[in-house]
Picture 1 (cartoon, rainbow, N blue to C red):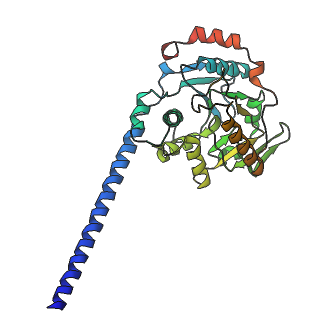
Picture 2: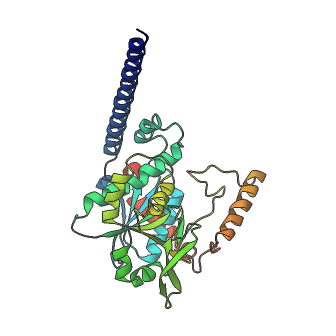
Picture 3: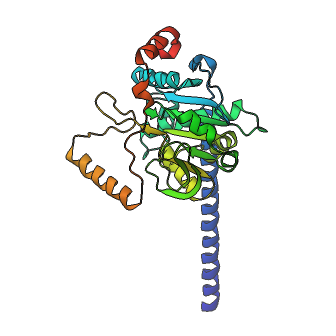
Length: 330
């Protein structure tokens, strides 16, 4: 009798265990499908730019070697940065498109915020703005063509020799890379890939390219990123770093940088990082950051050799804005 009771208990425990495993399996499967459904619908909320939302700056340099398009991401309310971006493009005679960035109040951002409790709204807006450019590139380029585009944020300055340097990059580099960063983003130089004696620039393997202010992207890579990063789990630059570290992307960076971000100040506030740069906490953080950069062998380039912004005509750019801005840009 005791033996039969033990056998019954063992069968009961086995049945309960199997039921628990089945419950866990179906629960995980349900949550995964639910997450996948959210990811799919999340991407579908972002649509390519239409012509009415783009400001086209016409320039004689419509092609930079393999570069076919130049996009500048700008919040419509930041006309100060837009004026400077226009002035830089006019000084370099580049053909470029200013495209609207998402704000923290955009419906596409607010709808995602409900599903991203530990993610800053400003970081979500930055992710969505770059994602929209990638979707636009993916939809406007042929799958058969390996086309490159330049993507700039609106707070940069460029070297005057930027077009010439880009055109001097060998075809073998363009054929190998997924991304080429115009600034090194506090990125320690990896393996040397190419060196230009004429322009005194080097191209290195990017080891930790934590920035998105200026980069060249291949059309195939834009399609890949739309698939790989449909829903953000971290800031967009950190997501790219993770893909580079896991060898899913090949990224190179230029040293010294062709592009740098302008320092944040009262006259140039940041839309992403609200930092009090006069506080003692900031000075401590900046000192630690600078020390870590030095420790990692990051080359200290605080300014450009020949700033385009210093030579740009802001008055001409302001006149251009007043003449051609309409719709969301007014």
